[in-house]
Length: 199
Picture 1 (tube, rainbow, N blue to C red):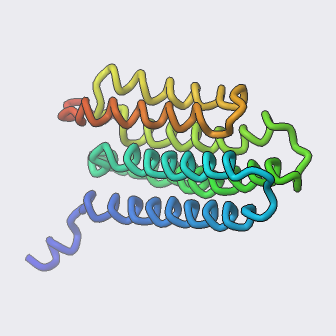
Picture 2: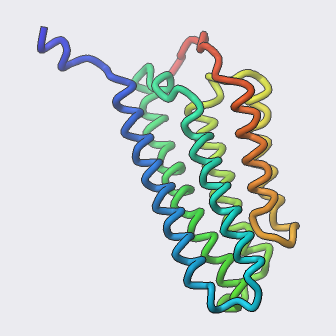
């Protein structure tokens, strides 16, 4: 009996570990962004843009957290092939979550004059990681647990955040898009998975 239990497959336990690490990376990313914002306090002429970036960074981080934990991740590793896809795609999830804070620091460097990067290029350092995060999570965990509306909104949102650089206030469109995705996910819970895995 003990040997049988030792050899059992525990999708909940495995995906929980990935979820905890994603949570840690998002938390570290938020902390790094907060430290960068604090360091920039005495380097800006007006606090308005800095406050805006602070609020938007918090909104974006909370939205990414909600989106990641919306689907039942244990359904994503029902076979060996699917578990490999799930595990290796998390490199993109972790990398994107960590890169988000680096992008915020680039935005702050442009705001304080430490960087001569264009505003469009600076915004892309934030939006590209977010788009990658959304697409990666959608690919491995959301798409097979969602209806047609969610499967349209999430990938479309990943594309829309790339338009953020056209706005004068950094991260604004990205935050609005992510909040919109969260609202859709709240209104449309995961569906029962009835697809047959071919992996």
